[in-house]
Length: 248
Ligand SMILES: Nc1ncnc2c1ncn2[C@@H]1O[C@H](COP(=O)(O)OP(=O)(O)OP(=O)(O)O)[C@@H](O)[C@H]1O
Image (tube, rainbow, N blue to C red; front, side, top):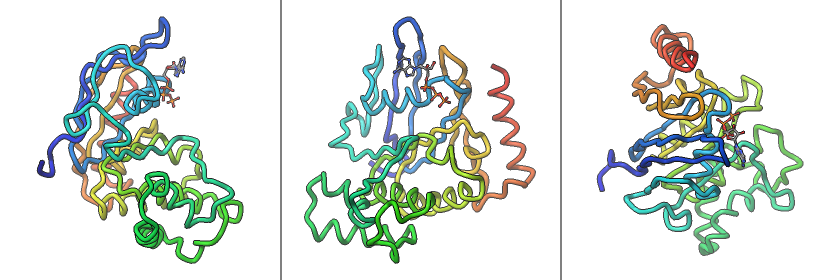
């Protein structure tokens, strides 16, 4: 496979809860190295999509492939950062970051090497032996992101990870995430209801409709980086996405 090939293929994904049809025959591809943001109205099924992709939910119909095979979380090295992210209070920063590798039973030296690399990227070197209750919200977020990146995921799934942070902190962490994405080449699927955030982060955006949910529009986002949220091009794209969601 060469860069640019599809890493994820979603085909006819349909998911309901009882009589409530949420995802209605959704199909799209994610290219290797994409930063795909999925936006849509509240309750349209963004989290349901990620939970279906990771097989936390059974689906009614459809197929989700990673590298052309039915998704297998163990085999395909997928990391998932939930809305309510958490750290393990009884482990220090270094141990928290290495946790994903430890459960994958990687050798100690490899864990140390990968933890050292990623701890530098997120600027937590001085805090490696601190425990979560000694850290600020921003540091905890970095620990969670570093834990995901330490496993060198082929695919990183993020569900509104910055939803409850204040704006300044959110901007800072978004920049750090872009920096990690650019350095590692990981493919990211990022769910958000915040249109500005989607335009700031993504190189591709999928806009969902209201339930029963289909894809309203797939868009490329070629705005140059670093992005300026006050630039006319940024505002134009943000307004275009907003209109698409407002229609519903
Ligand atoms: N486990 C469940 N059982 C029953 N209904 C559910 C379940 N999970 C989600 N739903 C319903 O499915 C719909 C989609 O929910 P979901 O949380 O996926 O939406 P969302 O787009 O992520 O929402 P938000 O923007 O508020 O985060 C909602 O109507 C919700 O009530």
